[in-house]
Image 1 (cartoon, rainbow, N blue to C red):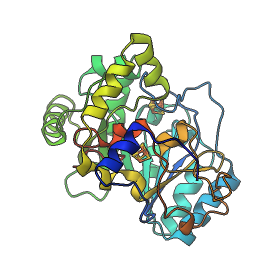
Image 2: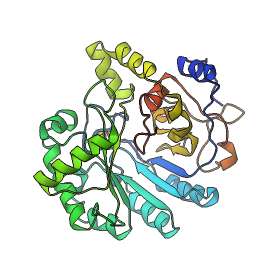
Image 3: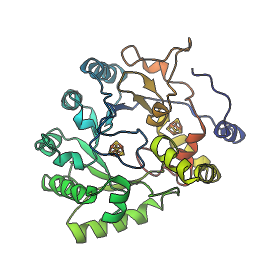
Image 4: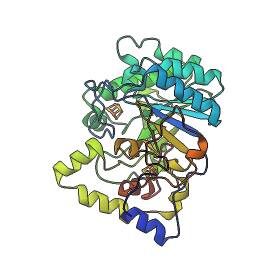
Length: 323
Ligand code: SF4
Ligand code: SF4
């Protein structure tokens, strides 16, 4: 295990008699690389069209082999824009054939990129669960955070998915949206925001979706650099720490999820991956997906003060508000 000095987060957990320990592995989250067609201001993986890191087919096959031997029931594929990885469709096809639930963290604009014309049909044909960022229902806010024209292309992408049955009430083609704040503040209550999204997207764009997940911005990578630039990093970190909610601790994603990097290294979550905090064996050597066993992971997770981003307020994880 990576040796780290106690942090304010660790100290707070200890004071409450809590510890973050993985108790099962139900979800394998795979970051297949940093290549993306967008360059969003709040991207916690610093993805862009200029990045080159990409998971190889051999590593993708090692992920599939781990899914089989671990019994994990969900494969959560992220990036970058994961669909740009040459092994994306291989991962989806093989995992679905094995009965695994597959989530595609789809940025929506990828659906209108050259060469991706058949992507919506591919996702539908394989029953892939689509989870997409849409940080607001207004064009101005989305374009400010994610780039000019992104809102219009995102709506067009949602409409194409809707036309295939995604997001319709009762449809097995699951379509969820993700909200994250446009600045250094906590997300509002998930249920009320979901109702606003549903009403406005339906009336103004004819778009339907299943759920809205609220995520807190992590003070890492590009968002952290933005905060430093604005002189607001300490203020935001204090906001997260002050809003720590012990009830969210048992539900944070690292208790049941393992994260795999594009190069096959293993992490407790995507955020630890970006902070280069790998899961290490007893010998201190980072674990790799090709030799990973579930028993390697049933242990305390590697934490840091960024973890307050998961436990602030109602809590925040890949699945939205927690408590
Ligand atoms: S936030 Fe998502 S869509 Fe935006 S640059 Fe990062 S990976 Fe790409
Ligand atoms: S940042 Fe990662 S390790 Fe920390 S609480 Fe969140 S999921 Fe767990």
